[in-house]
Structure formats: structure tokens, C-alpha cells
Image (cartoon, rainbow, N blue to C red; front, side, top):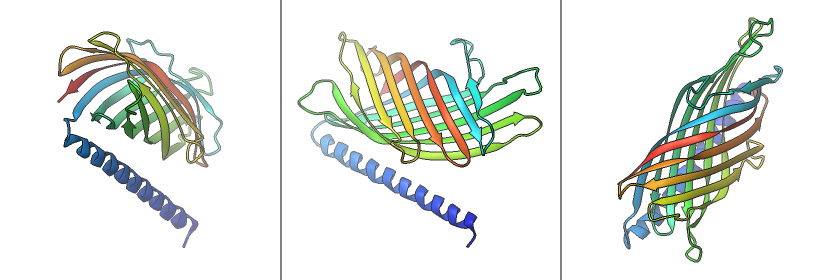
Length: 255
């Protein structure tokens, strides 16, 4: 068996293990929610949102020199951001909850423009987040969150008549806390912080959010806040040391 075949088999086995973990975790939290549903209703919500994030950091492909990335965008023009799609789905009972978040971002920039070293980095990223939440009965407005964050990154760099490319994906466990006090009978504050990676696949993953939610009625709410996500990943094919941060706003729909 060739080295490539061995590596490919190992990658397939790792992907299968991650999938089984996600299925098992989802089943566990779903069972907990079903148990609660026999006593009370579960609250479901989907939130399409826009995260107008700036991208800063550096990347490198297979031994190539590291390329800086700095989107330096204007919030309303979204410079260098070619495409974005994102939504969050939550299901919450009295104590147990489940969260799924999807984010797609497409970014392109030109650096050292007009020089012999002009470079055009292109980055496509998909981030999937599966998490469960638990609200201790003894503490108000406080939740513990734990789950898995999957990131798939496609990176291309056009420089000096060459176009090296890399595609890599990894799954990080993470754990954190959520604090959601009511400011008024319609206005709520949401604070979330979690940390992951732990050197299992990425070296470090830090996520922090601060959100205001205004509840119009039983069904709709408007959300506005700020999010920061820092990821540091390094393997033989890609160095990815990137932070994303910026304003986020969305429309919550309960059913």
C-alpha cells in the first residue's frame, strides 16, 4: 500500500469518527429535549444573519512564504467580501438545548499591487457548528455550551505566475459559557465565550460574542452585536492563522 493510500485511509477513518461523534452527541441532546418535551414545550428558533467580518492574519501553502491577509473593509461596502451566507438554528427546553450554526464566506484580495510581487489570495471558508447547551437550575440566565466546530478552507494564491492551492478541513471540540440576562421585558443581552482546538487538530480556536436582542412579539426578534473568532491551524499543507471580527445582525424567527 502506498503512503498516499495509507494517509487517505487514515483521513477517511478520522472523518468517520468525527461523524459518529456528531451523530451520537446530536442523539444525546435530542433525547434530553424529548424528555423535557413530555413536561413542557420546546422553543425552536432560526436566525438568518449577516456577519460583516473583517479578515486579518496570514496563510501559507506547502512551504510557500506566509501571505498577510487584511480585508480593511468598510462596514457598509463589505470590501473584498465576495460572498457570504449564514444562519443559526436552536432548540431549547427548560435545561437542555441544541444549536446548529452554518457560515460560508468567500474572500479575495490583492496585495503589493503594481509591483513584481503582486499577489492575489482567495479564500473560501465553511464553518459548521454543532453544540449542546445545559442550563443549571441553580443559576439564572447562565448556560454551559459544548460541541464541535467543523471548518473547511479552500485557499488559492496567485503570485509570480504560479497558483498554489490547498484545501483542508478539521474539527475542533470547544467548551464555553452563555449569559443572557433580560435588560427590559423586550430587550435582552447575550454574551458568549468559548475556547477550543486544544492542539487536537487546530492549535487554538477562540470565539466571543456580544449580542442585543429586541423581541417584537412571540415570533420575531431583531439581533445586533459583535463577534470575534480566532483560529490557528498548522499542518504540512496549510498554515492558517486568521481572525475574523465584526458586526453581526439577524432576524430571529420562533416557531
